[in-house]
Length: 174
Image (cartoon, rainbow, N blue to C red):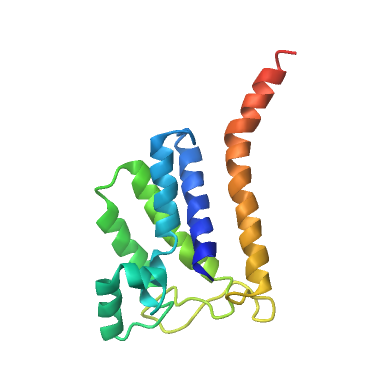
C-alpha cells in the first residue's frame, strides 16, 4: 500500500483512540494524536528504500539495509510491535495507544495486499487475508477505492461520535 493509504489508516486509529478515551476532536490533544497517527501509520515502511520514512529516518533505514532486512518482514512483525510497546511505555496513555494502534494499522492493511506480510517474523512465511486474485495491489485502482473508503470512514467517525449526538440531543427538545 502507498504512504497516503497508511496515513489515513493511522489517522483512523487515532480517531478510534480519541473516541474510546472520550477526548474531544476539537482539542490540542486531538491535533497531536491525529498527527501522530498519520506518521506512525507510515513508520513500518522505514525498511523500504526510497520510502518517505526511509528518507526521514535515514540512519535507521541504512542500518536495516546493512542488516539486509527485507520489506514487510521485521518492521511489519508482531515481535517488532511488541518491542515498540516496551519502548513507548513512557508516553501518556493517549499517545501510547495512538502510536501503537496506528503502527499496527500498517501491517494490518498490508495483509490485504497481494504480497502479504511476514507477521510472525522470524518464521519465514507471509500472510495475506485475501486470495491473490482479489488482493489489493499497491498503487492500483483497487487501492485507490480502498483509500477512499478509509477516507469516508475517517469522516464518519467524528460525525458518529460527536456531531450526531449533538444533533440528537437538540432534536429531543422539539
